[in-house]
Amino acid sequence: MSKRRKDGKDDIQSVGEAIRSMLNSYQLTTKYDEATLIDSWERVAGRPIARRTKKLYIRNKVLFVEFDSPTMRHDFSLYREQVLDMFKKEFGPGVITEIVAM
Image (cartoon, rainbow, N blue to C red):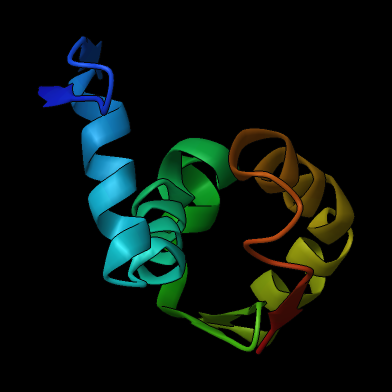
C-alpha cells in the first residue's frame, strides 16, 4: 500500500503494517490481539491441554481457561506460569497479564 507524503514522495507500507494501522485507527488492536491469542491456544499450550479445555475468554487482560475436569485444572496450574511466559513472548506483555484456571 502506498501513501503520498506532503513532500510528494511515496511512503511504502507493507500489508501487515497497513492492517495494523487500520486496526489502530478503529481502536480494534486489542480485540484482534486477544482473538489471535485464543486461536493460538492449542499451539502454545499443547494439544493434550487444548483437548481438555472447554472454554477460553479474556476479560481485563486476564485469560480465563475452563477445563473439563478438576484434575486437569490442577495439572494445568503447575504449568500456568510457563504458558503465560510463552504468550507474553509471542504477543507481548500487554495482551494478557494472568491466566486463571477454572
